[in-house]
Length: 128
Ligand code: THU
Image 1 (spheres, rainbow, N blue to C red):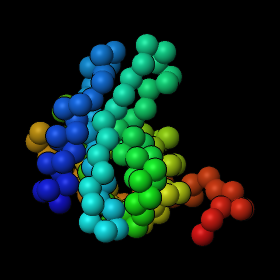
Image 2 (cartoon, rainbow, N blue to C red; image 1 turned 135 degrees about the vertical axis):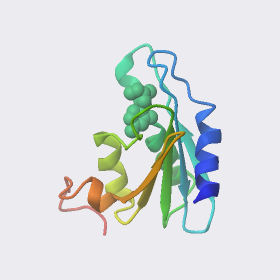
Image 3 (cartoon, protein in one colour; image 1 turned 90 degrees about the vertical axis):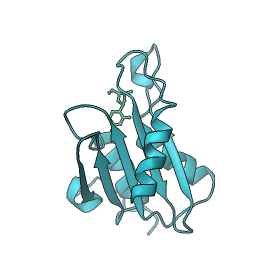
Image 4 (cartoon, rainbow, N blue to C red; image 1 turned 30 degrees about the vertical axis):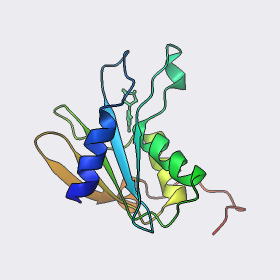
């Protein structure tokens, strides 16, 4: 867990967040033990911003890395950086049993996708 958090803090250094000033890092531990990282990437057209969690998740998909075990999400500030609603929906579909650890400079908390998003939206033809 310490290693995953360290990777997330390192990824956060590459955040592109000139509008919010809020830099986020994420690190995903895949089934074969690889760590895939992400940072938030903002845009002058604000709605195009992509969160650190989805950058990491989509990168892992693109690299063909499944069996995700845990994701660390880190940011500085008073509030722990729990994933936003959009990221919860994405992560819950791609990795329903994922463990999430969120941390700031002072504290950390561990939770699961089940706790973060019960009763997520699903389609009937979703792959199992
Ligand atoms: N952000 C994330 O990277 N992850 C979240 O779960 C919530 C928000 C980013 C998006 C934006 O660049 C900045 O934090 C402020 O919302």
